[in-house]
Image 1: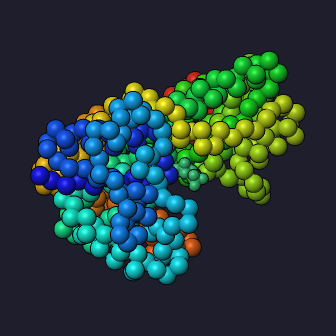
Image 2 (image 1 turned 30 degrees about the horizontal axis):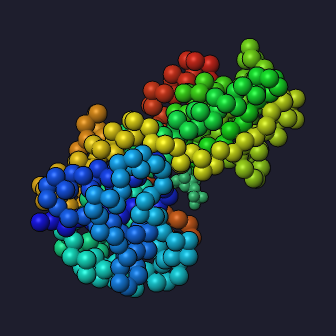
Image 3 (image 1 turned 90 degrees about the horizontal axis):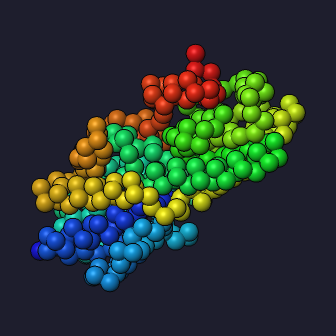
Length: 359
Ligand code: F6P
């Protein structure tokens, strides 16, 4: 009988509980035992490691659609890879993770994480010596190289769409615009996809330069006197500081365009998991369990051309833009962005959405 560990790391999103529940179901079908590590790497960094043993009642199916991580995502004060590097404790931290994994006598660990966690797992691969490491990509940012989908993204797009649909009604009543700031870090996927879904008139993303005067002209020329302007949190405006939506809002106000800036913030991460995310979570859980059965290790589940398969962590790491935190140069992550060839950019332009200076 194999013993499988599950761990969720990084920011939470919808779909984590679905993937955990599906891994448990699939494991019991194979006669495998499952434990869940509590609080991500924090649960391994403590001695003894903190975990729960799964049984039929641990995560009932009706809770599997709920957002958040049933296994938690790490206590605010805890050491993680970044803070351990910052505090010069990375060696002890890595040793403790390795020791805990050996103590748990796992055959395989399924790490459900974002590009940061998966990059760090690859860069510190010795920790997982002696067990199979299978990663599953989750993030509302959709910034993970070599996969066309990440768990949580579709639900976040739905959350933003619903949020903007509601704003549209008050926008119409008051003949005003709403500048809505999305999450996504330095990747514009969330803003781009939600903006097109909502029918925004302007979408500003970090990957495409924009001219604020063109934004103003575009809004003045639209036949409507109200609507949505979606701006990604990763954009910047030369000579201005503060939150991007506030900066754009101030410029519009100065140009005589009535508007308000709004911030959906963490509501983007907490929607009831939409069916497409549940299907994705199920496909990725199944793919991860098959990878364990096939004795694979250091792999990530990925969607490529509609198919769910595993790719090596080395390929994942090398495929992205490798960046390091200016304050913590030892921590490297492999990032994906909106490609200039993304068909949605042309579609948005064809539909009269200003997305920046693309020519
Ligand atoms: O990476 C996921 C994400 O939600 C980003 O989109 C956002 O910038 C960040 O996490 C917010 O982090 P926190 O929950 O720590 O404020």
